[in-house]
Image (cartoon, rainbow, N blue to C red; front, top):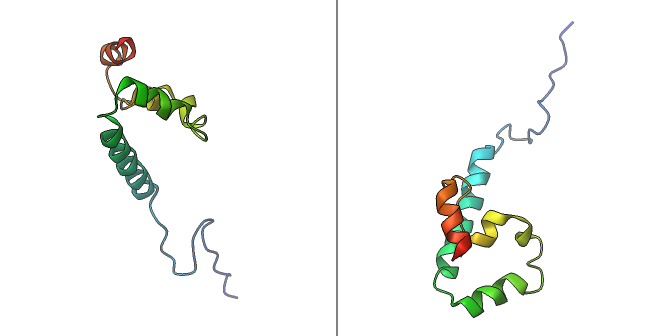
Length: 83
């Protein structure tokens, strides 16, 4: 008697699952593009960016608010915060 073939959880019908790293890379690329776009904003524009409707979720992440990479050394984050 042949045993039934089970697909791993999360697999699609083609048997090819997107790798989590690919999804993260797409997200991270989009984040970096947004950072570049926002890097030229004036202080007034930065405040408007943080207070715009729908921005409250992004403001929960301190790295997003400061526009720094989560792997940034703490001293560099401190400098960015004090600016």
